[in-house]
Image (cartoon, rainbow, N blue to C red; front, side, top):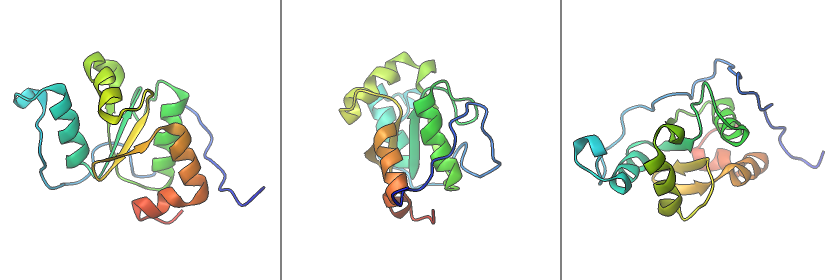
Length: 141
């Protein structure tokens, strides 16, 4: 093996008890607002990514992912013990299409850290293997 970190096994039923699934703690309020408060979908995306230090748009949920790529990114975050919030884009087709425009990235999952788009599954996997993701998130790998 060429110095790469071994990835967790992708399994839709994976639960190791590590923190990470669900909502993150209190974060400072930022621009934009949810549609429930009169914003549009792009404003809601801006609000979600700015109000959660780590935010994952995925198919399914961290506990029950609906695709292998989403499962892999959620498992990496859980493996690292990172608290993150997520959105199941399968429940909101308008948002599913809008995030592709917002990030100028055609695929899901999409990971945001401190309001900035980081990448999809391939990029997150590579960053995890090299330790760059751990550095960005401020965690030990």
